Amino acid sequence: MQEPELLRNLQPIWLSRATEAMARSLNIRDDLRAQLERFFFLLTQAVETGNPEWLDPVLDEWASSLTQTDLEARESNLLSFIREIMQRTIDVCRQTLHEEQALSLIVDIIPHLTYCYEKAAQAEIQVRVSYVSNQLKQVQQTLERLDRSKSDFIAVAAHELKTPLTLVEGYAAMLREVLNKKELSPYEQELLNGISTGTKRLKLIIDDMIDVSMIDNNLLSLNFQPVWVNRLLSVIKNELEPFIKERHQTLEIYDFPGSSEMTFGDPERLLQVLRNVLTNAMKYTPDGGKITVDGRLLPGFIEVVVNDTGIGIAPEDQLLIFDKFARLGNSDLHSSGKTKFKGGGPGLGLHIARGIIESHGGAIWVESPGYDEEKLPGSTFHILIPHRREPPDEKLARLLAPVIGAA
Picture 1 (cartoon, rainbow, N blue to C red):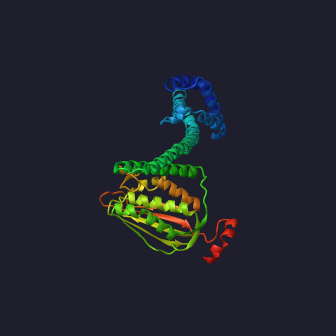
Picture 2 (spheres, rainbow, N blue to C red):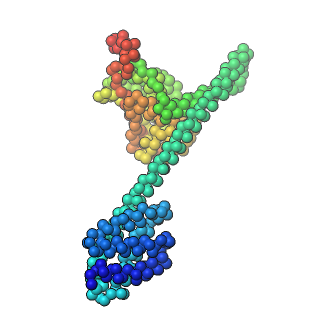
Picture 3 (cartoon, rainbow, N blue to C red):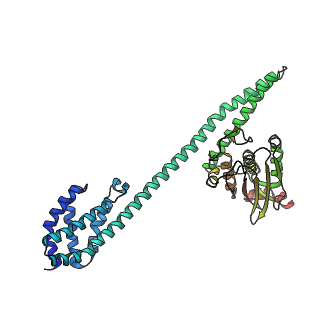
């Protein structure tokens, strides 16, 4: 008797035993018998034709019908199902047929059952990959929504805070004007100065929040003008000099190739970048430390290099510090203020610096051997400013033609 005919004769017994055993041992759907009957029919066709691909439709269907619980489970329910089918098929052959017939039939169907197992594994992998990809996509969409929500909150909060802050500044100025007509005691003068200092600092924070909102929403506009890096650095040095003396630090700014060459950029925004990077260097450099600014001229760029003798940055933090609200993971805040050692802050300065530089078409990154408050390995920030020899648009080029010609 040929193997296909033997299989057809075995179908009622196989179907009964397989259904009973698998329904008891596995959590299977109600239509188990119909599914097994279809599988056995296709297996018979595969054996008769010698082509195991007859089994593809049912295997693909089983793989695509995996539930979320199946996909989240570590052990594959589908492969367990296929293994159970293989075992029951071999058992029925051994128990029902003569030894010679059983051996002949098992040898003939084993390649097809093995194909089922391999095909099921491949199909399940594809389904799992698709499932994981969809899960990752959903997570990414959720994170993007959260990031947009944070940006929206920052924009709304900054707008809502700016109005009352303006009122406080106005009334504080009027109060100072009225009181200045009288002779103030040192204590009264200290109170007025405290209000002024607090409002100025709050204004800076709100301005940073507005900048972050514009950067995140690609709304940052740049006012391109002729600019010289050495002049920007000179302004920053004069601005930071009182704080450098207060911290007993040393700030050395060198002339370097490219620093005296004219380029086109937004001077106020580039000044903001240098200010943020240098104040960050001051903040994480202990009293008595040293900060140096050097650089070089590269093809298409002017590189500014800010080096400090501070506590350094751990490798895992060297990308994160440019994210908004980022802080050094290993450091505890010792104080508050922009220039105090390890002073607290909203964590927006370097994020804004990166946004401004990237809006110019440049780049910013940091290098550091690591974080150590005792050995003080320091950090080195690299700022690439595009070296534009011509204005970015024709209107500005016509307006600045005399300046360009003179330069």
